Length: 529
Image (cartoon, rainbow, N blue to C red; front, side):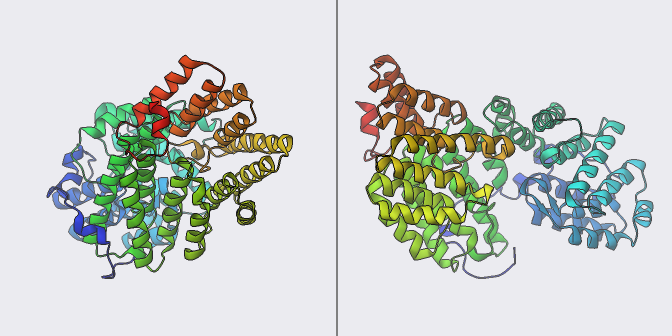
């Protein structure tokens, strides 16, 4: 991000946050310890910098590491921290050139830098960072760095920070001889070991949630969720991260509340740093509003969702249509149409896309689904064309979205067998993609935006195959616990089968999700009957 004094969020004037905002991020508040050879002043700045790195407040961390260097110019660990700050593992940001420049300020060569570290332990930390930003491809260096941190943590078993940084290094590394799931299990185990020593640890709590963020292992994350609930903090990432657990458990009100708090805190931080809308990234803006919006829609708080959409569109325009806000704008509008089954909104959604030149996959999937459901096959064809352009980018899931829209179109045209084949193919393609890219299974707003089993089940039900539809909805619920659209589909399928008690159970679960739903929610009355 660049510092400037340009347009800031209109939302900021509405925010009131505690005066303890800065105090709540201190090392003492998080129970942090990381002994080094630094002087008292340098050590305190160093400790604050490490705490802020764990909290993903990287710009603030840098200020403390620089202050530590000013207090003690040869303090090697302050340079270690500032360099490591350029490797933002979870966000997959790696600035090797910047890190090398930082290390060269300490001394010109690795050997000279090592001599600046007065203990073998500090030399090991510095050596690990030398590897991370040394020679070889990024993946090779990350793997070698992780191995160095493993050795360091075993050499100094009393060092909780060595365990924490080793755990984090496994986020994007799979050591030889381990599967990805075994590596995630190791990451969780290391995080738990750190938390046994310091339950408030700002990094280990996050790393535990991240390493168990999938439908099978998510229950372990409650330890970190409870730990974080006991910490007084305004750090946006610390407020946000429990929502990965909440979404895995269908805790929609908690998801919305956590992320709107995180968003407000993030925007206050942005204002304090004098940044403008056009300087924002997905982590301090889009990620948070998308999670909040999903929580609002799933819990039926449509007024709150509407206010958020209006704010994001206003910010998008005020920013000069910044790319960091384009994706969230598309996502918020698309999910409203899909999750509330507002099929007549297809044209309005397409107008929004054309007006702002939005080509996001989720938006055009929503346009395509709504267009077919409302009988506008020409618009559906346009959607399919846009999705086809994104088909070769797996992260965008354009190929799966295209299969979904094409399958729906064929069903609308009466080509039922071929339609069902394509939708089944979408389900299988999505399943394989989840295996290849486990990140698709994390607790987040659904990807693809219209879940494949959900859509397949809806078409099966419309074709009179209620038993097969119920199976798809129930399989979907094992992966997307509590998703209201899947619950609704299961209730409808059970009703069609005459399984009254099962239908009532699913409708009861819907009412539990919609205790705060607005009165004009288009689907609530069906559940309340």
